[in-house]
Length: 60
Image: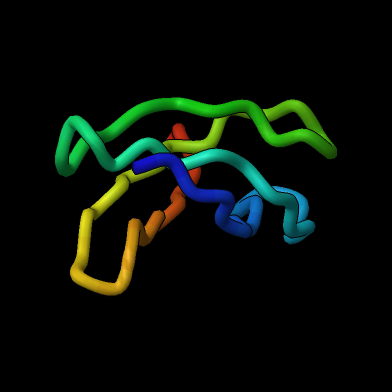
């Protein structure tokens, strides 16, 4: 179950779309911002309505 989701960069505040693969269940990973290239910690949670991604700074 791969879906396109919009996430917001906690550094520059810009939003961009990315692909979320919920087939492996809940997970955490690092993805670079497509705008400012800084590392974003992403926490993917699989819900009945689809994948949800919470983001935070990598240095928090």
